[in-house]
Length: 410
Image 1 (cartoon, rainbow, N blue to C red):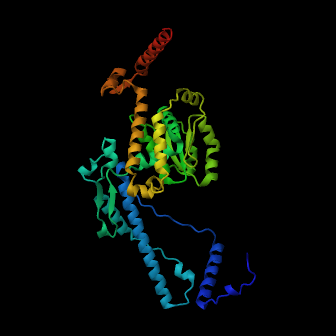
Image 2 (tube, one colour):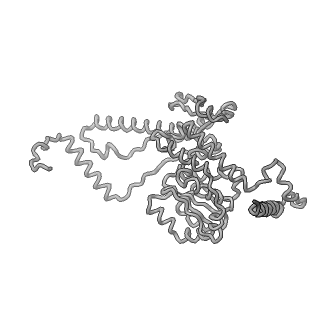
Image 3 (cartoon, rainbow, N blue to C red):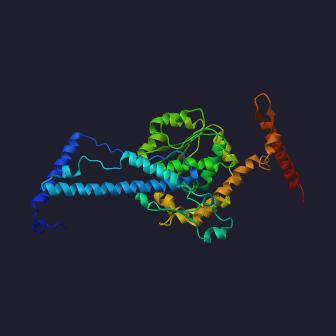
Protein backbone atom coordinates (compact mmCIF):
# COMPACT_ATOMS: atom_id res chain seq x y z
CA UNK A 1 0.00 0.00 0.00
CA UNK A 2 1.01 3.64 -0.47
CA UNK A 3 0.81 6.04 2.45
CA UNK A 4 -0.38 9.56 1.57
CA UNK A 5 1.70 11.02 4.38
CA UNK A 6 5.08 11.84 2.77
CA UNK A 7 6.56 13.59 5.81
CA UNK A 8 8.91 10.67 6.53
CA UNK A 9 10.48 11.11 3.07
CA UNK A 10 10.95 14.89 3.44
CA UNK A 11 14.73 14.69 3.98
CA UNK A 12 16.71 17.98 3.75
CA UNK A 13 18.84 18.20 0.58
CA UNK A 14 22.18 20.00 0.62
CA UNK A 15 22.75 22.98 -1.68
CA UNK A 16 25.55 21.13 -3.52
CA UNK A 17 23.23 18.17 -4.20
CA UNK A 18 20.57 20.56 -5.50
CA UNK A 19 23.06 22.26 -7.83
CA UNK A 20 24.29 18.92 -9.17
CA UNK A 21 20.71 17.72 -9.68
CA UNK A 22 19.77 20.89 -11.56
CA UNK A 23 22.95 20.68 -13.67
CA UNK A 24 22.29 17.01 -14.50
CA UNK A 25 18.74 17.79 -15.61
CA UNK A 26 19.88 20.77 -17.68
CA UNK A 27 22.63 18.65 -19.33
CA UNK A 28 19.99 16.05 -20.24
CA UNK A 29 17.73 18.73 -21.77
CA UNK A 30 20.62 20.26 -23.74
CA UNK A 31 21.75 16.86 -25.02
CA UNK A 32 18.21 16.07 -26.16
CA UNK A 33 18.13 19.32 -28.16
CA UNK A 34 21.43 18.44 -29.89
CA UNK A 35 20.02 15.16 -31.21
CA UNK A 36 21.71 11.76 -31.47
CA UNK A 37 24.98 10.99 -29.74
CA UNK A 38 27.61 9.10 -31.72
CA UNK A 39 29.64 6.56 -29.76
CA UNK A 40 32.78 5.53 -31.63
CA UNK A 41 34.18 2.10 -30.79
CA UNK A 42 37.89 1.46 -31.09
CA UNK A 43 39.20 -1.67 -32.75
CA UNK A 44 42.53 -3.41 -32.35
CA UNK A 45 43.73 -5.43 -35.32
CA UNK A 46 46.74 -7.74 -35.52
CA UNK A 47 47.31 -9.20 -38.98
CA UNK A 48 49.44 -12.14 -40.04
CA UNK A 49 48.46 -14.37 -37.12
CA UNK A 50 47.77 -18.10 -37.29
CA UNK A 51 44.27 -19.46 -36.76
CA UNK A 52 45.49 -21.75 -33.98
CA UNK A 53 46.94 -18.75 -32.09
CA UNK A 54 43.73 -16.70 -32.04
CA UNK A 55 42.93 -17.29 -28.38
CA UNK A 56 46.45 -16.19 -27.42
CA UNK A 57 46.06 -12.81 -29.13
CA UNK A 58 42.47 -12.35 -27.99
CA UNK A 59 43.71 -12.74 -24.43
CA UNK A 60 46.51 -10.21 -24.97
CA UNK A 61 44.21 -7.68 -26.66
CA UNK A 62 41.71 -8.03 -23.83
CA UNK A 63 44.55 -7.21 -21.44
CA UNK A 64 45.30 -4.08 -23.47
CA UNK A 65 41.64 -3.00 -23.41
CA UNK A 66 41.36 -3.62 -19.66
CA UNK A 67 44.50 -1.58 -19.01
CA UNK A 68 43.28 1.35 -21.11
CA UNK A 69 39.96 1.31 -19.28
CA UNK A 70 41.77 1.33 -15.96
CA UNK A 71 43.91 4.29 -17.06
CA UNK A 72 40.83 6.15 -18.33
CA UNK A 73 38.92 5.64 -15.08
CA UNK A 74 41.90 6.84 -13.05
CA UNK A 75 42.41 9.90 -15.29
CA UNK A 76 38.71 10.81 -15.09
CA UNK A 77 38.75 10.53 -11.31
CA UNK A 78 41.81 12.81 -11.06
CA UNK A 79 40.19 15.35 -13.41
CA UNK A 80 37.01 15.48 -11.31
CA UNK A 81 38.94 15.87 -8.07
CA UNK A 82 41.03 18.69 -9.58
CA UNK A 83 38.00 20.57 -10.92
CA UNK A 84 36.10 20.25 -7.64
CA UNK A 85 39.16 21.38 -5.67
CA UNK A 86 39.48 24.48 -7.86
CA UNK A 87 35.75 25.22 -7.85
CA UNK A 88 33.30 23.31 -5.60
CA UNK A 89 30.43 24.71 -7.70
CA UNK A 90 31.60 23.03 -10.92
CA UNK A 91 28.54 21.65 -12.73
CA UNK A 92 28.21 18.02 -13.77
CA UNK A 93 28.60 18.80 -17.49
CA UNK A 94 32.11 20.14 -16.90
CA UNK A 95 32.97 17.15 -14.73
CA UNK A 96 31.95 14.61 -17.36
CA UNK A 97 32.49 16.40 -20.62
CA UNK A 98 34.73 16.73 -23.45
CA UNK A 99 37.92 14.86 -22.84
CA UNK A 100 38.84 11.46 -24.19
CA UNK A 101 41.59 9.50 -22.50
CA UNK A 102 43.50 6.73 -24.16
CA UNK A 103 46.97 5.55 -25.09
CA UNK A 104 49.14 7.71 -27.25
CA UNK A 105 48.80 6.21 -30.78
CA UNK A 106 52.55 5.66 -31.07
CA UNK A 107 52.67 3.98 -27.67
CA UNK A 108 49.74 1.74 -28.58
CA UNK A 109 51.42 0.75 -31.83
CA UNK A 110 54.60 -0.13 -29.92
CA UNK A 111 52.61 -2.23 -27.44
CA UNK A 112 50.86 -4.14 -30.24
CA UNK A 113 54.17 -4.77 -32.01
CA UNK A 114 55.71 -6.06 -28.78
CA UNK A 115 52.74 -8.35 -28.17
CA UNK A 116 52.98 -9.74 -31.68
CA UNK A 117 56.68 -10.52 -31.28
CA UNK A 118 56.58 -11.90 -27.72
CA UNK A 119 53.37 -13.94 -27.84
CA UNK A 120 54.66 -17.02 -29.58
CA UNK A 121 54.66 -20.67 -28.61
CA UNK A 122 57.90 -22.59 -28.62
CA UNK A 123 58.28 -25.61 -30.89
CA UNK A 124 57.74 -28.01 -27.98
CA UNK A 125 54.62 -26.11 -26.89
CA UNK A 126 53.17 -26.29 -30.41
CA UNK A 127 53.65 -30.05 -30.37
CA UNK A 128 51.51 -30.48 -27.26
CA UNK A 129 48.39 -32.46 -28.19
CA UNK A 130 45.52 -34.12 -26.38
CA UNK A 131 46.25 -37.77 -25.44
CA UNK A 132 44.76 -40.40 -27.75
CA UNK A 133 43.54 -42.41 -24.80
CA UNK A 134 40.17 -41.08 -23.58
CA UNK A 135 40.90 -41.69 -19.90
CA UNK A 136 44.25 -39.91 -20.15
CA UNK A 137 42.59 -37.07 -22.05
CA UNK A 138 40.23 -36.41 -19.15
CA UNK A 139 42.53 -37.18 -16.20
CA UNK A 140 46.01 -35.99 -17.22
CA UNK A 141 46.89 -32.46 -16.02
CA UNK A 142 47.21 -29.90 -18.80
CA UNK A 143 50.40 -28.03 -19.54
CA UNK A 144 50.12 -24.25 -19.75
CA UNK A 145 51.56 -21.39 -21.75
CA UNK A 146 52.56 -18.54 -19.40
CA UNK A 147 53.89 -15.15 -20.44
CA UNK A 148 54.72 -12.47 -17.86
CA UNK A 149 53.76 -9.06 -19.28
CA UNK A 150 53.86 -7.09 -16.03
CA UNK A 151 56.79 -5.04 -17.31
CA UNK A 152 54.32 -3.62 -19.87
CA UNK A 153 51.68 -3.02 -17.21
CA UNK A 154 49.62 -6.06 -18.23
CA UNK A 155 48.47 -9.06 -16.29
CA UNK A 156 50.25 -12.31 -17.06
CA UNK A 157 48.86 -14.36 -19.96
CA UNK A 158 48.21 -17.96 -18.95
CA UNK A 159 46.45 -20.40 -21.27
CA UNK A 160 46.03 -24.20 -21.37
CA UNK A 161 47.88 -26.25 -23.98
CA UNK A 162 46.78 -27.08 -26.60
CA UNK A 163 45.46 -23.53 -26.96
CA UNK A 164 41.67 -23.06 -26.93
CA UNK A 165 40.36 -23.39 -30.50
CA UNK A 166 38.07 -20.47 -31.32
CA UNK A 167 36.49 -22.08 -34.39
CA UNK A 168 37.32 -25.76 -33.80
CA UNK A 169 35.81 -25.81 -30.29
CA UNK A 170 33.78 -22.67 -29.54
CA UNK A 171 32.42 -22.37 -33.10
CA UNK A 172 31.72 -26.09 -33.43
CA UNK A 173 29.95 -26.21 -30.05
CA UNK A 174 27.79 -23.20 -30.96
CA UNK A 175 26.80 -24.79 -34.28
CA UNK A 176 26.33 -28.29 -32.87
CA UNK A 177 24.15 -27.17 -29.96
CA UNK A 178 22.23 -24.72 -32.16
CA UNK A 179 21.16 -26.67 -35.24
CA UNK A 180 21.69 -30.09 -33.60
CA UNK A 181 23.37 -33.19 -35.04
CA UNK A 182 21.01 -33.76 -37.98
CA UNK A 183 21.10 -30.10 -39.02
CA UNK A 184 24.90 -30.06 -38.98
CA UNK A 185 25.16 -33.15 -41.21
CA UNK A 186 22.67 -31.69 -43.72
CA UNK A 187 24.55 -28.37 -43.71
CA UNK A 188 27.88 -30.05 -44.50
CA UNK A 189 26.29 -32.06 -47.32
CA UNK A 190 24.99 -28.80 -48.80
CA UNK A 191 28.53 -27.42 -48.76
CA UNK A 192 29.84 -30.57 -50.45
CA UNK A 193 27.32 -29.86 -53.21
CA UNK A 194 28.76 -26.31 -53.40
CA UNK A 195 25.57 -24.64 -52.17
CA UNK A 196 25.83 -21.25 -50.48
CA UNK A 197 25.36 -20.79 -46.72
CA UNK A 198 24.59 -17.58 -44.80
CA UNK A 199 25.21 -17.66 -41.03
CA UNK A 200 23.22 -15.00 -39.14
CA UNK A 201 23.45 -14.15 -35.45
CA UNK A 202 23.48 -11.35 -32.90
CA UNK A 203 27.11 -11.75 -31.77
CA UNK A 204 30.03 -11.19 -34.13
CA UNK A 205 32.24 -13.70 -32.31
CA UNK A 206 29.64 -16.46 -32.67
CA UNK A 207 28.94 -15.69 -36.34
CA UNK A 208 32.61 -15.62 -37.40
CA UNK A 209 33.55 -18.66 -35.29
CA UNK A 210 30.69 -20.73 -36.71
CA UNK A 211 31.42 -19.70 -40.30
CA UNK A 212 35.09 -20.62 -39.87
CA UNK A 213 34.17 -23.89 -38.14
CA UNK A 214 32.35 -24.98 -41.31
CA UNK A 215 35.62 -24.83 -43.24
CA UNK A 216 37.31 -27.11 -40.70
CA UNK A 217 34.40 -29.55 -40.53
CA UNK A 218 34.62 -30.21 -44.28
CA UNK A 219 37.86 -32.16 -43.71
CA UNK A 220 39.10 -34.13 -45.69
CA UNK A 221 37.68 -31.76 -48.33
CA UNK A 222 38.57 -28.10 -48.93
CA UNK A 223 36.19 -25.22 -49.62
CA UNK A 224 37.42 -23.71 -52.89
CA UNK A 225 34.95 -20.85 -53.26
CA UNK A 226 34.21 -17.49 -51.56
CA UNK A 227 34.47 -17.21 -47.77
CA UNK A 228 33.46 -14.04 -45.87
CA UNK A 229 33.13 -14.64 -42.12
CA UNK A 230 31.43 -11.27 -41.55
CA UNK A 231 29.56 -9.52 -44.34
CA UNK A 232 28.22 -5.95 -43.78
CA UNK A 233 24.44 -5.64 -43.65
CA UNK A 234 24.62 -3.23 -46.59
CA UNK A 235 25.99 -6.06 -48.77
CA UNK A 236 22.96 -8.33 -48.37
CA UNK A 237 22.48 -8.29 -52.15
CA UNK A 238 25.60 -10.46 -52.34
CA UNK A 239 23.37 -13.49 -51.62
CA UNK A 240 22.35 -13.34 -55.29
CA UNK A 241 25.92 -14.13 -56.34
CA UNK A 242 26.20 -17.08 -58.75
CA UNK A 243 29.45 -18.05 -57.01
CA UNK A 244 28.97 -20.42 -54.02
CA UNK A 245 29.90 -18.79 -50.71
CA UNK A 246 30.04 -19.16 -46.95
CA UNK A 247 29.26 -15.84 -45.28
CA UNK A 248 28.29 -14.48 -41.89
CA UNK A 249 26.07 -11.50 -41.08
CA UNK A 250 25.09 -9.72 -37.86
CA UNK A 251 21.46 -9.01 -37.02
CA UNK A 252 20.20 -6.42 -34.56
CA UNK A 253 17.36 -8.21 -32.85
CA UNK A 254 14.49 -10.37 -34.08
CA UNK A 255 12.98 -7.64 -36.25
CA UNK A 256 16.21 -7.24 -38.21
CA UNK A 257 16.49 -11.04 -38.48
CA UNK A 258 12.94 -11.22 -39.84
CA UNK A 259 13.70 -8.55 -42.44
CA UNK A 260 16.75 -10.49 -43.68
CA UNK A 261 15.03 -13.87 -43.91
CA UNK A 262 12.03 -12.34 -45.71
CA UNK A 263 14.08 -10.10 -47.98
CA UNK A 264 13.06 -10.60 -51.63
CA UNK A 265 16.68 -11.11 -52.70
CA UNK A 266 17.24 -13.71 -49.97
CA UNK A 267 14.02 -15.54 -50.82
CA UNK A 268 15.03 -15.67 -54.47
CA UNK A 269 18.53 -16.90 -53.56
CA UNK A 270 16.99 -19.69 -51.46
CA UNK A 271 15.28 -20.95 -54.61
CA UNK A 272 18.73 -21.26 -56.19
CA UNK A 273 20.77 -23.01 -53.50
CA UNK A 274 21.10 -20.64 -50.51
CA UNK A 275 20.57 -22.03 -46.99
CA UNK A 276 20.52 -19.99 -43.76
CA UNK A 277 21.95 -20.91 -40.36
CA UNK A 278 19.90 -18.96 -37.80
CA UNK A 279 21.99 -18.80 -34.62
CA UNK A 280 19.35 -16.66 -32.87
CA UNK A 281 16.73 -19.41 -32.81
CA UNK A 282 19.04 -22.35 -33.51
CA UNK A 283 17.50 -23.36 -36.83
CA UNK A 284 18.77 -24.42 -40.24
CA UNK A 285 16.61 -23.08 -43.08
CA UNK A 286 17.39 -25.43 -45.98
CA UNK A 287 17.39 -24.24 -49.58
CA UNK A 288 14.21 -24.69 -51.59
CA UNK A 289 16.18 -25.33 -54.77
CA UNK A 290 14.37 -27.85 -56.93
CA UNK A 291 15.93 -31.29 -56.58
CA UNK A 292 18.44 -30.43 -53.85
CA UNK A 293 16.15 -30.59 -50.81
CA UNK A 294 14.54 -33.79 -52.11
CA UNK A 295 17.96 -35.38 -52.66
CA UNK A 296 19.03 -34.48 -49.12
CA UNK A 297 15.84 -35.94 -47.68
CA UNK A 298 16.21 -39.21 -49.60
CA UNK A 299 19.92 -39.62 -48.84
CA UNK A 300 19.73 -38.60 -45.18
CA UNK A 301 21.38 -41.02 -42.77
CA UNK A 302 21.08 -40.70 -39.01
CA UNK A 303 24.29 -41.06 -37.03
CA UNK A 304 23.27 -42.43 -33.60
CA UNK A 305 26.68 -41.74 -32.02
CA UNK A 306 26.52 -38.10 -33.11
CA UNK A 307 23.14 -37.69 -31.40
CA UNK A 308 24.61 -39.11 -28.18
CA UNK A 309 27.55 -36.69 -28.31
CA UNK A 310 25.12 -33.83 -28.86
CA UNK A 311 23.21 -34.76 -25.69
CA UNK A 312 26.45 -35.11 -23.75
CA UNK A 313 27.76 -31.72 -24.87
CA UNK A 314 24.39 -30.14 -24.10
CA UNK A 315 24.59 -31.43 -20.53
CA UNK A 316 28.07 -29.91 -20.14
CA UNK A 317 26.85 -26.61 -21.62
CA UNK A 318 24.01 -26.39 -19.10
CA UNK A 319 26.58 -26.12 -16.31
CA UNK A 320 26.76 -22.37 -15.45
CA UNK A 321 30.55 -22.65 -15.13
CA UNK A 322 31.03 -23.89 -18.72
CA UNK A 323 33.31 -21.56 -20.69
CA UNK A 324 31.43 -22.48 -23.87
CA UNK A 325 28.66 -20.15 -22.66
CA UNK A 326 30.82 -17.01 -22.83
CA UNK A 327 33.33 -16.14 -25.55
CA UNK A 328 35.54 -14.06 -23.25
CA UNK A 329 35.74 -16.89 -20.72
CA UNK A 330 36.44 -19.39 -23.50
CA UNK A 331 39.47 -17.70 -25.06
CA UNK A 332 40.91 -17.11 -21.58
CA UNK A 333 40.34 -20.57 -20.12
CA UNK A 334 39.26 -22.89 -22.93
CA UNK A 335 36.91 -25.86 -22.85
CA UNK A 336 36.99 -28.38 -20.02
CA UNK A 337 38.76 -31.66 -20.70
CA UNK A 338 35.44 -33.50 -20.97
CA UNK A 339 34.10 -30.88 -23.38
CA UNK A 340 37.25 -30.97 -25.52
CA UNK A 341 37.13 -34.78 -25.66
CA UNK A 342 33.49 -34.71 -26.79
CA UNK A 343 34.22 -32.11 -29.48
CA UNK A 344 37.22 -34.14 -30.64
CA UNK A 345 34.99 -37.21 -31.01
CA UNK A 346 32.38 -35.19 -32.91
CA UNK A 347 34.97 -33.98 -35.44
CA UNK A 348 36.36 -37.49 -35.93
CA UNK A 349 32.87 -38.93 -36.44
CA UNK A 350 31.91 -36.24 -38.96
CA UNK A 351 35.15 -36.75 -40.89
CA UNK A 352 34.51 -40.49 -41.05
CA UNK A 353 30.96 -39.89 -42.28
CA UNK A 354 32.00 -37.43 -45.00
CA UNK A 355 34.92 -39.61 -46.13
CA UNK A 356 32.56 -42.38 -47.21
CA UNK A 357 31.44 -40.25 -50.18
CA UNK A 358 34.89 -40.58 -51.76
CA UNK A 359 35.73 -44.18 -50.93
CA UNK A 360 38.67 -45.23 -53.04
CA UNK A 361 40.26 -41.80 -53.10
CA UNK A 362 41.30 -42.16 -49.47
CA UNK A 363 42.67 -45.71 -49.70
CA UNK A 364 46.24 -44.61 -50.39
CA UNK A 365 48.07 -41.31 -51.08
CA UNK A 366 48.26 -41.74 -54.87
CA UNK A 367 44.79 -43.28 -55.34
CA UNK A 368 43.57 -40.16 -57.14
CA UNK A 369 45.83 -40.89 -60.11
CA UNK A 370 43.60 -43.73 -61.35
CA UNK A 371 40.64 -41.35 -61.78
CA UNK A 372 42.08 -39.07 -64.44
CA UNK A 373 45.04 -38.24 -66.65
CA UNK A 374 47.88 -35.76 -66.66
CA UNK A 375 47.41 -33.13 -69.38
CA UNK A 376 50.81 -32.34 -70.89
CA UNK A 377 49.52 -29.24 -72.69
CA UNK A 378 48.09 -27.54 -69.59
CA UNK A 379 50.47 -29.12 -67.09
CA UNK A 380 47.51 -30.05 -64.88
CA UNK A 381 45.71 -33.22 -63.83
CA UNK A 382 42.32 -33.67 -65.52
CA UNK A 383 39.93 -35.45 -63.16
CA UNK A 384 37.39 -37.73 -64.84
CA UNK A 385 34.15 -38.04 -62.82
CA UNK A 386 33.03 -41.09 -64.83
CA UNK A 387 36.13 -43.07 -63.86
CA UNK A 388 35.30 -42.42 -60.23
CA UNK A 389 31.52 -42.89 -60.34
CA UNK A 390 31.22 -45.97 -62.58
CA UNK A 391 32.94 -48.41 -60.17
CA UNK A 392 30.64 -47.14 -57.40
CA UNK A 393 27.58 -47.76 -59.57
CA UNK A 394 28.79 -51.26 -60.46
CA UNK A 395 29.37 -52.04 -56.78
CA UNK A 396 25.87 -50.83 -55.85
CA UNK A 397 24.24 -52.86 -58.64
CA UNK A 398 26.09 -55.99 -57.51
CA UNK A 399 25.05 -55.36 -53.91
CA UNK A 400 21.38 -55.00 -54.91
CA UNK A 401 21.55 -58.19 -57.02
CA UNK A 402 23.15 -60.07 -54.14
CA UNK A 403 20.47 -58.90 -51.69
CA UNK A 404 17.74 -59.81 -54.18
CA UNK A 405 19.13 -63.36 -54.53
CA UNK A 406 19.51 -63.60 -50.78
CA UNK A 407 15.83 -62.76 -50.19
CA UNK A 408 14.81 -65.80 -52.26
CA UNK A 409 16.80 -68.24 -50.14
CA UNK A 410 15.38 -70.28 -47.30
